[in-house]
Image (cartoon, rainbow, N blue to C red; front, side, top):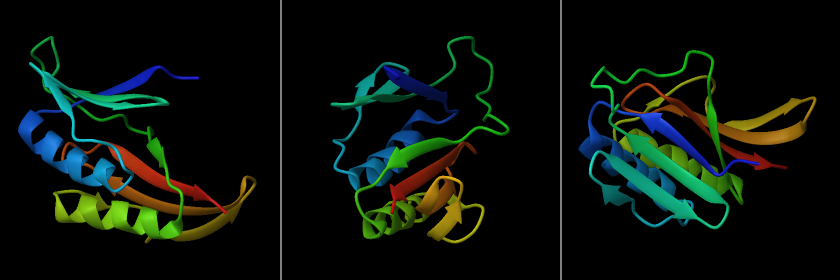
Length: 124
C-alpha cells in the first residue's frame, strides 16, 4: 500500500543512531545518508527520517503511530530494548500481548528521540 514513510527530526545524527539500532533488530541495514535525510531500504518499502526542508523545527504527529512488523515476540522485545538503550522512551503499556477486535497482538511502543510514536507488532 505504501511506497515510503518519512518523518521529521531535529537531530539527524541522533535519529540515525536510534533507528540504525532499532531497525537493525528487524534485519534492516543501517541507513543511507543523503544530505539532510536518511533512508532505510527494504523489499516492502522505504522508511526515511529528514530534517525539515522548510527550516522549521520538526514536530511529531499527535495521534499518529508508525508500526513495524516483527516475526516473533522476542524480536519485538529486542526492538524495544534497542530503542530504550538508544534514547527512546517507553510509552503506553509494557511490551506484551493485547487482545482486541484484531485478535491477539504482541505490541511494544516507544517514542523516538524526537517524540514520534512507533510500535513493534507481531500478530499472534
